[in-house]
Amino acid sequence: MAFHYKKKCKDFTLLFLTRILRMFSYGMLAVIFFDNLFQKGINATDASWLQSSIVFGDIFLSLILTTKADKIGRVNTLMLGALLKLATGLFYAFTSDIILLAISGILGVISISGG
Image 1: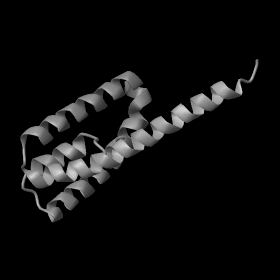
Image 2 (image 1 turned 180 degrees about the horizontal axis):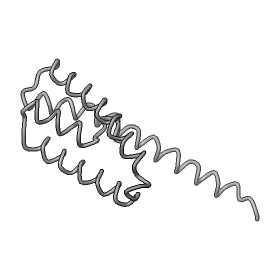
Image 3 (image 1 turned 90 degrees about the vertical axis):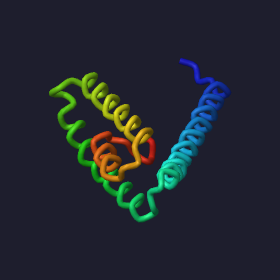
Image 4 (image 1 turned 135 degrees about the vertical axis):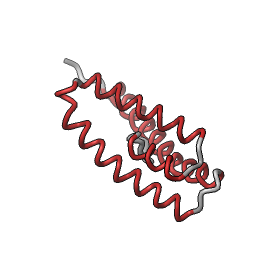
């Protein structure tokens, strides 16, 4: 098997640039998320509590989903996670009630880091 340095260098550069772009977009997600909450009329304290509840809910539900993934099937686990994210997105699009947003955020396994 031949080692093609120029091809490997090109692949590495492309991989590195896409990683930078992805991390930048995840960072911007945090800015847009809070800006959206502020536009809905949610103050900074409530937005902080909401974000904290989302983080703890994400940890808890991710732990449950990853430990049960083999039992219920990995494809089913991914589909369940996708449906929960979809439902959460709809709640965030159409409501500004902080309680509904918190419940939706906790159950929706969304992450401010884009994960």
